[in-house]
Structures are given as structure tokens and as C-alpha cells.
Image (cartoon, rainbow, N blue to C red; front, side, top):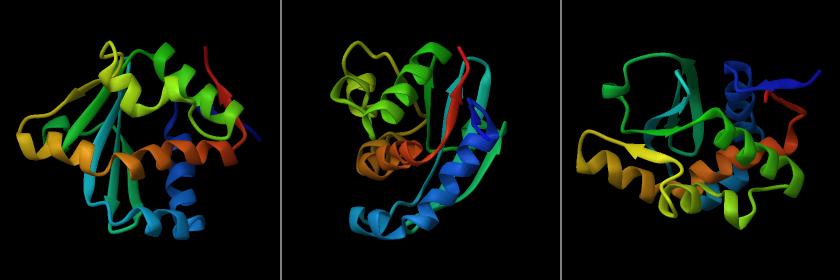
Length: 141
């Protein structure tokens, strides 16, 4: 059965993938951050400890997160479509590209350390999203 995107079920499936594909995440190094993904008005909180995502939740207080990645639903859907189609994000749809070129995805943070964590752990965070290549995803328009 397809997993709808965006949804808590989608992010929970990605959480499970960090455990199922542990060797990939261990290669990237530890990742100790809690961050948010804001899709239109919905906030999803993603919590990483050491090499895996340990918890995802919908809602919460963005002030308690290191940073929040903010973009309209259309942008997130295009990124996930790219990941599924190409077995990983193409160059135009990586978090690095989308947050730097034209600021399509905004990185919101309350202190410099939170901002630094986005860049420090970007490879693990991108791989977290790229794990969607293993899922049967139904992308909502």
C-alpha cells in the first residue's frame, strides 16, 4: 500500500529506513540533531541520535528544534518525486541546492549552532530523504 506524502507515516517510514540501512548512515558519521520540516502549515519534527532517526512526530514547538526546513508543498513534492524517480535526489532537488540557490527551501533557526547543524549533518539529512527511493510513495498534489 502506498505511503502518502506528506504525512507522519512517510516520515516514520524514513525513520525505519535509517535502522534498516544502518551501514549507510554509519558511513556518513554521527548525526545528533532535532530538526523540523514545515510543509505549508504542517510541521514534522525529526530527531536523530548517533546514526539513526529515533523519533518523528507531527507538530511540536519549532523553538525546541535546531532548525526548520520550510517550503511550500509543491517544492517538497517535487523533491520527493525526484528522489523516487532517480533513486536519490537529482542535482536540482537536493537540500543543498534548494536551500542555497534561490532559497527555495528556507532554513529557519534561532541560534548559530542550530544553523551549523544543518550544514554539519546535511549528508545524513539528505540520505534520510533519499531513503524514499525504497518506498512506495503516493505524492499528494
